[in-house]
Image 1 (tube, rainbow, N blue to C red):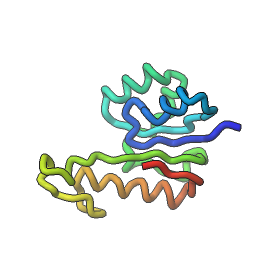
Image 2: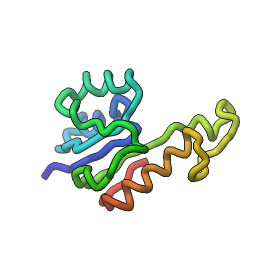
Image 3: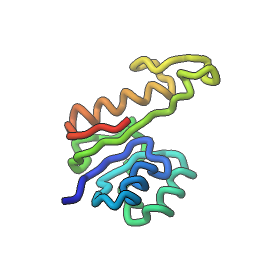
Image 4: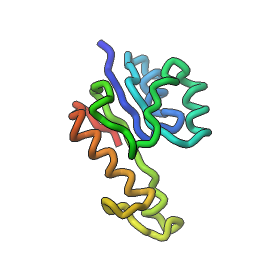
Length: 117
């Protein structure tokens, strides 16, 4: 049985690489990234999922995303570091780190069985 996955802030998708190297059966139903270099790397490693990038996490209508069992996500942590002047990641703070709260929408709508942050 294949586990269905959605990865947010995917980058080159180290989560899917780990599953692949562990020999686990999975299907990436969708992923989200906007960085052009991350997208290029992702598409080189996973060309079969090239057309499943939902892009900007702030613009995803989660009702239009296929159901998934595992939701993996992280977020830009710059704003909680000294380099980001510790601006924080409070909801609606408009910091890059507050993008974490966009994941809440996905979790509430899709109700995945597993979360990996």
